[in-house]
Image (cartoon, one colour):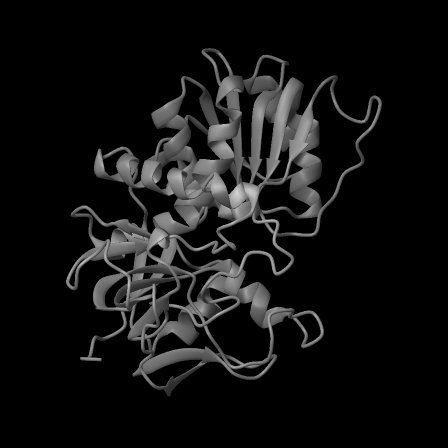
Amino acid sequence: MKALQYRRFGALPEVVDVPVPVPEPGQVLLSVSAAGLCHSDLHIMEATESEYRFGPLPLTLGHEAAGVVAALGEGADKFSVGDQVLVYGPWGCGQCPHCAQGKENYCTHPDGVRPPGIAVPGALADYVLVDAERHLVPLGGLDPVQAVSLTDAGLSSYHAVKQSLPKLTAGSHAVVIGAGGLGHIAIQIIRALSAATVIAVDVSEDKLGFALEVGAHQAVPSDEHAPAVIRKLTRGFGAMAVFDFVGAQQTIELAARAIATEGEITVVGAGVGAIPVGYRTLPFDASIRAPFWGSRHELWEVVELARSGHLRVEVEQCSLEEAPFFYERLKRGQIRGRAVATPGSREP
């Protein structure tokens, strides 16, 4: 089968031929219908060999996956060949207290979370091997190309927003920093689940326009004037929730200057920004969270949001062979929404 592999540190990934995996007991083999390209993949490709902690290369990329059940390992009996499914990505041990609650994104096993496409072979291939049936969610008639990014971009955004919903009451404001792959989804989720006014912030005029298209009430350029503009839009109070999908020093400082008393800053982006926390460093009783991905149950909820028409992911589609070029576009900020590859299918 064909697979897009990251084979040498510092080099672009390559399409290569690899054997089709064979499911062992409890495992499920999927014929991949769609696989997402993500900024997290770029972080892997920017890491040095000493920084990459999941073992030697090569690595088949792709932690967002949708596919059709192609084969079942012994004992795997919850799905049938031909079923269309999405893959829950943050694979935990399944035994620790967090995993027992379906919060495998916060697995406390010493090995930690081991997602496909990051720690084990991923979905940018004709076939992907899923370690356990509990990591599959029925697609339920959704278009796999449109739905595949629900498994990470959708789930991460939903998990971030859901925990801040008590703050987003009538008359409140939510700021979304970064109107790209995750941010445009978060805007829709906030609109669907709360009465808050949504303010989008981005450096790109095109993405600010995109944010308004998907439901933001206001769009503010990300510059030195942004905190003052946000304060004015919120009648001087500040935002009750700020979701930073960039995580850079500039954006985290912007969040700190825009947050209201008792507000909540949620840093989802994987930038390296940081702000001090202490007496009078933020408005009183403001808090900061740094969540990771989302729970298995929350993925079901995200799928229901999409199925009910409240959530639609903007997608640019490519072939497996075009994926390296799309990673370059992603790095340059030229992807509107999410990039999704559609590998070909072959008989296992």
